[in-house]
Length: 293
Image (cartoon, rainbow, N blue to C red; front, side, top):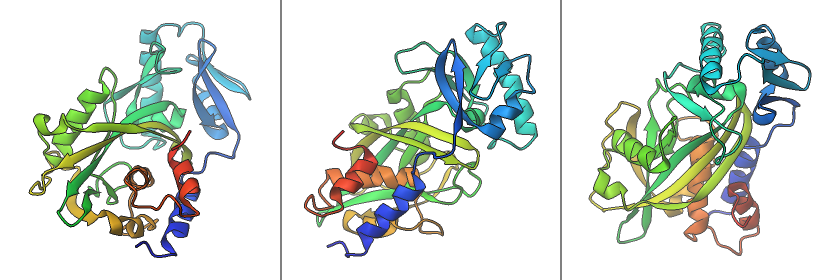
């Protein structure tokens, strides 16, 4: 039984944390097509890179000489390195994302991951709900992010999660991140089931997070214990699903899950029937996850 106060608090937290931008944003275009969105101060900063961008009050576009994927990738890499040296980006990853107008479009260019939010490009990620049938109910494995992580250091997180880098597929990223973050082998992760996608578009300190999360459910043996391989997770705990809503209301402190992870976990709670479909807040919580759309 979920306490009466929990679901209103959960809805209040996530509807605030995941609220779409209200401030005006400047379009970032390639070949006349939207590929990102910038805050006005960030767009003004890019005007200084006149050899790369044309900037006006409504949009940022590439100059005529930056017409190929190679030219744009090289030029934006130099811009990103300058911005990074100014402290305007999150920690440099030395990993690139493909920048596209939509999934079926060819990449317009590749961009360093640390600059993704600055330019407001749409990124893709994989998250995994690690589920266990305990014999007395279902539980979910939760991880704690390393205190040295560039984003959301020290916060609780889904068992597995990671961005899809340039050239990688959902399946490849799933297998890679499952092993690195939880020591889940290829045979086990192959049984993960795609549960759908969740979309996040919100302003953050480092720019616009515009991300599509490919959510997977993975049922794990009861004897399984996660073993991090890359130092990015420093703790794991197994939480009964019935107790999970009370954990998701925390916005800060040692018991707080990241907003992304909270949304992914909430999606699972709704799909698995932990939150009663007859609860008055059910449709509002489902709307946060994009369910029923």
